[in-house]
Image (tube, rainbow, N blue to C red; front, top):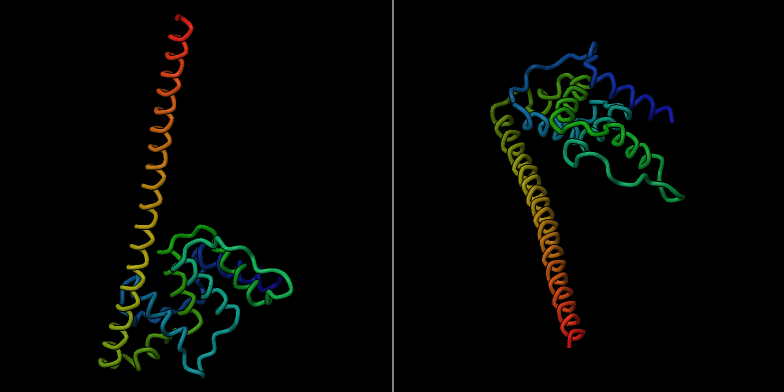
Length: 195
């Protein structure tokens, strides 16, 4: 429970702009979202001597999920098979609420820079041109995959909207047909009564 509160406090401090211990490397020249994906690349492959504490890793997880998946819409893990880690990860992501992906991407980088100010140097081997080129190439691949996913999700939403509209039109058309049939039936009954 304590980690949940601490994590929420860490997120609140980041969101409110309290970064008194923030020592930005200012070495990474990538813009967002490329900078976010470079930070993700480093966090997932940090050298063994770089220690990122569990609370920070949990916060990075939540910010990554919020940035790449949006607000947490899953149900909280529970029961005998739900681990404390799964629950803590869910809680951390849930604390992001409805924060926008651009904000959580920025907060991800800020969190990583607070934990490891020299992350860019480690990732690029002190700005080795060959390594920077390699990082940029892989970051671009990550961005392309992310953008394709976003486009696919947008297309799925458009299909859902169109399907809903077609369903409404179909219901309206069926209703009109039913009303005409009912009207014709009444007219037919009226004729039968007159005879």
